[in-house]
Length: 204
Image 1 (cartoon, rainbow, N blue to C red):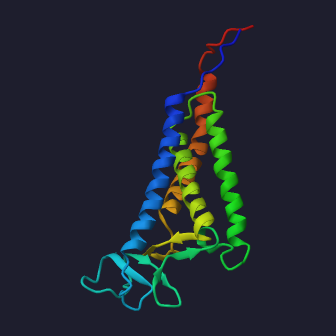
Image 2 (image 1 turned 135 degrees about the vertical axis):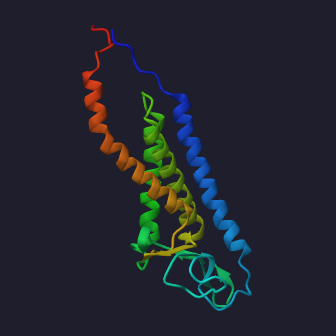
Image 3 (image 1 turned 180 degrees about the horizontal axis):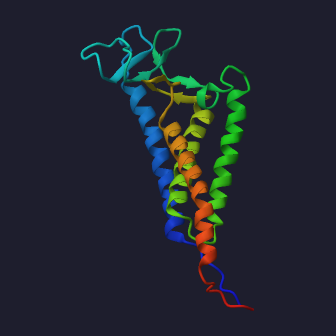
């Protein structure tokens, strides 16, 4: 009789705990940023947080600067920069963009949660971190799509490349995806090493 592998509750709990933390960081950062932006901000579409190469200036420079991007409503009041599409603005100009990506996000969040809950053996830590970050980022942006009709983006990175405006959920999603790819790339070596190890199971 072969022993059935038990669920690794500590690592499974760590995945959901990391997801909750990532989601909270994303939502709190959005609320704080847009709550503190004054209506008296100069007539710009961004406020520089960090700049290198041009101390004391708010003007864009051909170097590193991290900005908070925002937009204004018809009355001139500062409002969040809302992306109705996905990363890089995909589908953002289409009426169906937010609805389509809301469904995709919901399906992804539910799928990952079910996968984690049904795991029968401890996932590698790199996989656990990747899943936690991806789940948290997905839920954070899903909240925005359901409540605000689009994702609230505010971070603008301009170093070597003028990156599209993003948020902390996007940071977690990209980092998680990178770790997931790293995990997949390491799997063949791990599988080969496991195959060489003697079997500890009991034959029926």
